[in-house]
Length: 255
Image 1 (cartoon, rainbow, N blue to C red):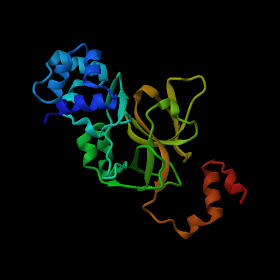
Image 2: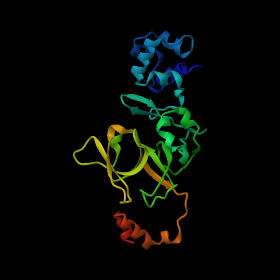
Image 3: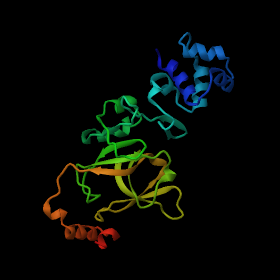
Image 4: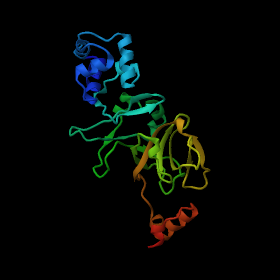
């Protein structure tokens, strides 16, 4: 069974359309849709263009990838095309969390929209997470203290950059820098850029164009891989650290 065969049927089902309705939308005959879905014939290039334009999905993805794992939220915008955003589920149809290993994080830029790349990642389930699609990203360096080098940030995928909340932390995939974990601010009177800031003030904040952002993931929780020592766990030490980082925590002050 070829991908284009199952994809036409699956994409039609996602839109809750009959064969006849899809045929009307594409100005085809109903028998033509049935023939393609049943594999009795293959759509020529002009019909592939029709499908690509109607579903707003590139032709190469339509003909090369089995999209049956995709749901309505399983696509992301890249330029003016909707590209497959792979989501893996378990036998109970529950979303699983793909873990991006530290050694493979450099390759995420080239594989983030590749189902084969996502498929080979290790996966876990964390039942306490809110609804949505999550991934776990490795953290390197000390720019986002107290998050330690080697920790993993579990973050929720945002399908609309307009949902970014100023002052929150996000995992961001950019065309030029790959993956970064930063606190994001929305500059006043600037609709083209975001300001990315490290909690460690030794690192300067910088602007990034919204058009260069490929994916953005909102912080959900942190998984540490290093144990905190006794000194780090003392409240006074925590207060000192945040004061040095110029982070004001009203909750701690009230303790």
